[in-house]
Amino acid sequence: MSVLSVTSSLTTARRVLDAVAVYLRPRVLIVMFLGFSAGLPLALSGSTLLYWMREAGVDLRTIGLFALVGTPYTIKFLWAPLVDALDVPVLSPALGRRRGWLVLSQLLLMAAIVLLGLCDPASAPGLVAVGAILVAAASATQDIVVDAFRVESLNESEQAAGMAAYVAAYRIGMLVSGAGALFLVSAIERAGLSQHVAWAASYAVMALLVLIGVATTLCATEPEKSRLANADHAAHARDNPVKRVAQAAYSAFSEFLSRDLAWIALAFVVLFKFSDAFAGVMTAPFVVDLGFSRDEYATIVKGVGLAATLIGGFAGGFIARAYPLALSLWIGGVLQAIANLAFSWLALAGTNASALTFAITVENFTSAIGTVIFVAYLSALCQNPLHTATQYALLTALAAAGRIYLSSVAGYVAAATGWVWFFVICAVVGFPSLLLLARLQRGGHFIGLDDPRRPK
Image 1: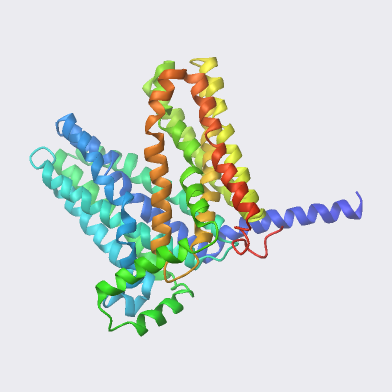
Image 2: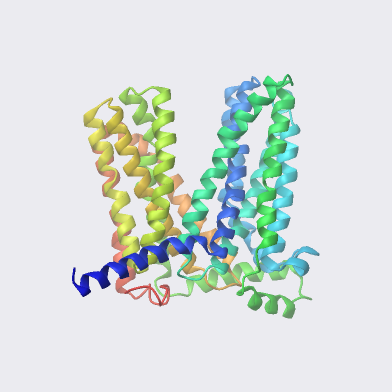
């Protein structure tokens, strides 16, 4: 073996070790545990709660209306300026600006989860709705602060790895509050306690698990970038709080929109995950139409899909760290678009478990790659510590709006074209975002967003 090949092998090995080692850095580990705390409450006001309500005999029409309790997640940008502009009495002076808000949101979240668990869906569905909205609002507030903390804590070379670790822990948190909470209810009932006591106890345990997030916050250090914001807060300490919040909101939006190509960037944010969402909303009906059983759906789509998502997340972190941001977005965008063709092939293959496993694996793997790279891009756009929470909440709200509203016509398209061509169309609708990406790249949009240490 030549000296050149040995050197090349050592260089490759060093890059792989560096890519793995970044996940063990304290800041990345902090973000990972915060991800668990962020993912934990989602099912408690969503799928787990709906299962409990149906088990208690609540009318299906009432259960359907409970989809609205997730509204705080889509409008959280409305109160994000509070997080940027104001400090939490007692907590912020003791812990710092971001950590003070984190502990407050986590304590409120624990109280809301316990309150929801004490409600009775059969006799007081209205009170359950109030409890669920409180859980969602506290959870959304925690999301605002965690996102700001992550963006401000991690340097450019750690953003993608931090997001990959965050997504993995977030999914695990969802699994714990979903399947884990249901298993716990069954175990408590087998111990001889009533169904209502079992549900209340299960929710109480979930509330205690939020302490993982509290402990993580207490172990963390306040981001260095908060010093600028602290100085600004001190300079305006005597200002009217309402004026400070309004000024924070105005400054955050105007600062972003004053940038070159800002409107093109916002359109790109709306469209980048559109292909993914357009196909995703029809995945379950597609699997049912092909004739797969409920158990096959649960095992392959939820089980294998989760594993592929976790692996894809870490792969996305590696790509975003190894390549320039624009190139990483090209890789993620193209992969998540063409992955839809695997479902077109599945539509031709029919009821074949191996084909379903392949299609689900490809789709979840590439989607996770695209998600991690996309979030790394959003994080790079929010580098002003005075506006991080507000700007990031706005960007994620726009991305969610694109997924929710643009994909609402997917059923009409599938009915008109059939499954094979529907997923071909899903691949095609991913390319307008790539045209916007090309425009942003030509306009120099990514200058200053990239980590200067990343290979060009």
